[in-house]
Image 1 (cartoon, one colour):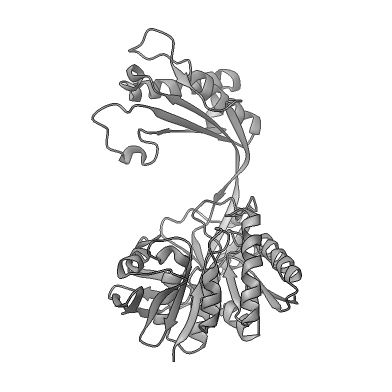
Image 2: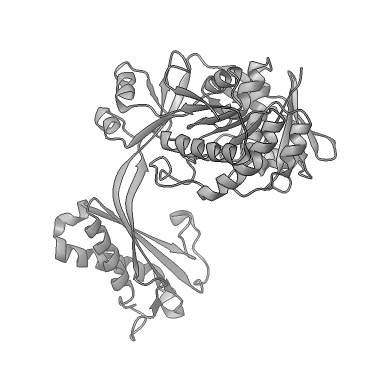
Length: 450
């Protein structure tokens, strides 16, 4: 048997013309991964969405009249970016608006992925939390101090609601691949092929050639899968291989809630214009079922300041000047707040155009750069202290002399006021997997008629 589905992006403002073609071609569902932790913890802290909310509304208005007319379910996970309960409710409200505006009818399932700190503590006491590589300390105090914790859902909750007749599935934080692997596996396709295709499908048209907007189709069977594009989108062996490398510490082995997808012997075989056959995926079942946890905690308040240097004399001695300038910033802050202030505030200075992106990994240039942008971030539990430290950086930087320059310092700053207070700052605080007896035990499913 062959199972056919389509993968799209929502929120990017992508062209969705291929959805009509895909639905007409008999896809069994249209999927979209809506989230990521790539851009940091702010979305899990309910501080915003990956794309502007109006982008999602626009895409839903275009999407649902098509999928509903063809009776094709739409499935998305990691709603709003972070996959919190707030994100699920935000997306669900947009779905209601889109259905009401178009006079559509259907059934929506909401899958919530948040877990209580108390539940996580119970698993910790029972020895059912597994630290992953480079995991931070994660004790009872750290767990209970979390602002929010989500489990990264596997395919089973998606299978449950789709078998229950959902026309729209809005899920919280989920494994990107679980969204796509759920239905093929439930239909009898082996996990190796279900997850192998999902590994390509998870980022929508990112695997297209060229990458970007569009709709990709997947025909999955017991021996492999075929990838192709709708509405002019195309794929090549190189574009699919590129996707295998994307976001992976190990491009050959991907850990999922119920096992490991092994792609070491995968083959990408062109079988026609913009069609690629993929074979060679293997699946290793896990001894125990685990769900990765993602959690955030407050890190304090953040203020930032920017200054730029284009003076060639200063830039020939930049390393020395930067070291002296940063120490002068600390001296000024200590003079007001006392020596103990070093434990209360942090200052990070990045020098873009010099070593701001890679830091010490950046090879030293043979010649000085033509200009450098300094970005300083100050973080403290007290917002006034964070602001003061960033302000001390700005004023010190634009006046601190260079040992090779006897005149006044020549720096610029692009913002007025020069210090920007960004408010509360959050950080991820867990890198563990939680063992569960049943993948449905720790999530919550709600139904409603649209």
